[in-house]
Length: 482
View 1 (tube, one colour):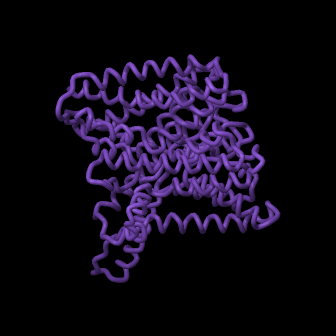
View 2 (cartoon, rainbow, N blue to C red):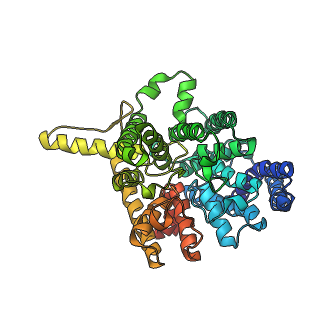
View 3 (cartoon, rainbow, N blue to C red):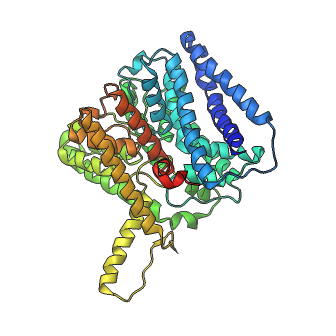
């Protein structure tokens, strides 16, 4: 029975992705890019067939999915959408092989933003729009969108969204999980529309504004041209708008719901938000001071710093300047941001700020315990005492993260990457950041890598997007035991 449920839910996930393919399809028609129409039409037809079968197949009142089945379902769903997303790329003829198309799709949906393309200007604009739209769909989570529809299939969604979402706290902001998913997606859509309108007011046309709104809110970082944001006349204003929305996308979206429902106390006492703002401010100001000599003025240095700190911290990966040419101290500070990430419940990847908050509070408690051996200390998050096992959970996550990063760095170096390039690329892949340093810096693409490295990077990008455990669990023998 679970196999039937799996097929139906995966079909729904794929059909949702297929429905969103209509946007670049209409764009191709409007812009006269008729050569890529089959690349969009074929998967759209397939998606509607799969979706029709899933909706009208035999339904039951309530299905139950085992814990093991949830992990399998989420992993298969992500593999399915990444494969499906690569089909338009491959059929367009703009990608040399399935490997390259699949890598680009995985990078898109996981919001990593690492590209194998060397000439974005040669791509049809509708295809660039699809690349950015993959960020947008993967940012809030295609599974989260699907959860809003699962009650119609008789399937509960809380298990799925727990396995797919990020962070240490995966709760509900409304009584029903489907309503929670709908609420978050409506907020997400509203932010996208607002940013798109602002970009259009600053001189972008509709297609570019929509593309960059998708890429920014999804914290992915794909661009639509070789020059990136700097090609526009009002580049400074556009950079500031993108900086603002990258920062906003790195905040837990549940807090926006609390703001709109006037639950201000939930926002004020949020420990992660305070730390997120504090870390962002400290790094932005410090890097600005370092860049004054490089930029020539403090205001220009501040603009460079704000944009790139927002980009790296939220794992978006945008860059309008080659930061590998910056002073070494500024490069070092950006590299430190590789380890931090955005907030839990945001579209950003990375470690998540809340995990560092937990570890910092635990370190403080250990110091207090040395001074007061018989004292009882607990970690308080958001004004409340946290679970006792929270520290162990975070510590084990950090351990697994570093082990996977070291393995990934070794594989990169074994296939010819310099040690520092391999190491920073490993962090960039696992944390879904995108650009790294040296041979895989912000001005370089990933197209020269061997196929094996590309597929391994695909694995770790999906693993990072699913918080590591949800994919690595398949490598544990106990998972396969009855």
